[in-house]
Amino acid sequence: MTNNALSDARSIERPSREAMLQRAPSVNQFWEQNRDLFEEAWKQWETSGSELSGKLDSSLYDANLRNAVERAWQDPDKESDVRALWKEVFPGVYEAQFFNAERLTTLRDYMNGASESGIPVRPPYGISLNRGGAMLDRRSEGYLAAPGFQAFYQDLMDSYMRPIARMLFPDILGYDTQTFGFSIQWQPDTDTSLRAHSDASSVTLNINLNLPGEDFSGSGVRFFDQETRQVSELTFAPGTALIHHGSVPHESMPITEGERSNWVLWLYGESGQVARPGNKHEIIDAKQRWTVPTASADGFAPF
Image (cartoon, rainbow, N blue to C red):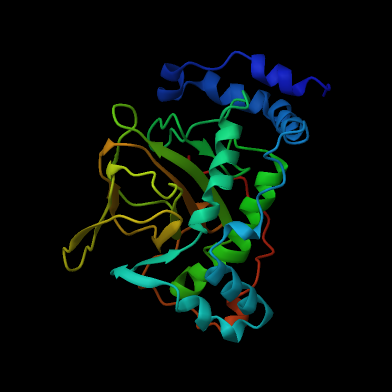
């Protein structure tokens, strides 16, 4: 690999939107053949003097959540402090302030800088061709491979998402060793919504990355309760997150004005195995919840 990986990545010919929509074999070949090039390009981008480098750290989290999570890792019996921050806003759906809304500019600036880096990133066209989105997990072809971002992302999954998910949904233990994530940007007249669906995950974390004052209309997340037939459309403020079993049916309603940016993060078991809500599961204590699995990433990607 040469010292010109960044310029080579920027100048490479990209697959067409039509080819990506059609899942043409040439598209997969493009990402696989250039994986090493793009990974090196991201390293060079992050060390090229960019002012964005090195700013993704724990200060981005909401202080109450960060402090409670840190206490729980030191003493898992204090996880009740974390649990108290999550409010059930729909059957099986919980909400909490996840990121510090006043620090979201740092995260959004980083994501915007990565988008403008000129390095190809694969949009999440497994759900729809969301042109403003990117694949976040290294198991995905064309992922955002900047080392600083990957360190932040993996710590989020290991230190925050997984133990919180285990605490709220004990049945996912053993079906939570693998991580997956992507970003989405909804824009009127471009990418506006996502029809009703369930996720190929044991648990899903959806984080709103809109900045304070960055308003939009529409684009609520509608949830469906299969037992009671209850339907509720939820909106969430900047930096807040919704977490739920992947099996809970939901849809993103059409955005009509402004833009909405969010991350969607999944946990599931090896080879895509997912927990089935209501199944019998082992009773575990807090110490087991606040651990990082030893299983290696298996390379399976849902899309």
